Length: 284
Image 1: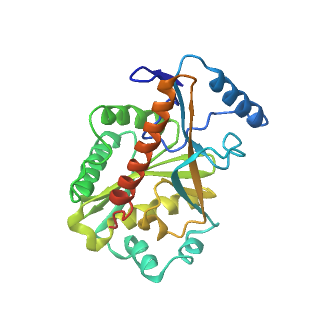
Image 2: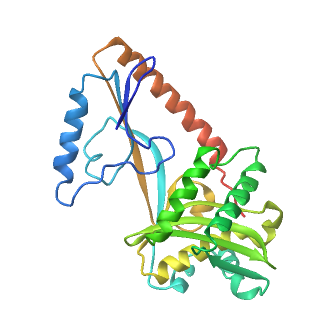
């Protein structure tokens, strides 16, 4: 956690903002003990006017049994069967058709990043992601220092076998890219990008389909679309959601009361803006 100094002092989870899940990493069997101890410790902390814990998942002990949380996000999760054909059988006829386009169109190729191609593949993702959001007048997720962080992180993640970065090409020209990660028996969808001019080919659908097919081939049991309840994710018939909560507790000072009121108001405004700009999603 970190303490931010400002109009009021806020003790906040490290990673708050762009992260999806921020529950602490706890050894199996100690979840309830650590969760109780953590809440007791931050409640008694004297150096902050406001305690602000972000993205605590509803199915984890740290969030269970508490009624003072604000729903921060919904993360949709698809349970995966043993075969990709079995998964496709749960989808609409039109989506099944689009998802199989790679097997029908010899001009389309899809390749996963290797240590040799990572730098160029990541640059392609950045460009296509920017194009995807530029069509709606928004900057996208990769800006400034975020790009340098991603270049460093993806190298480490690839070396550890966690990275799932792939590029879709039509006649050699990149038209779609996906950035996912894998850990345990779950693949996590993070970001994607595609050329809006090639939407008739459904590049966004194709890269997600390729990612899910690989996850099933590796024996993964879940595909987590992470934060956002957009319609394009619903098309893949997710099995269940994970809700994440934000818990805010004021300190004993007047500034704590003001900080709590202000942050709750800002939270409501942010939720409305997110629903407006991300709720429709980007289908392609």
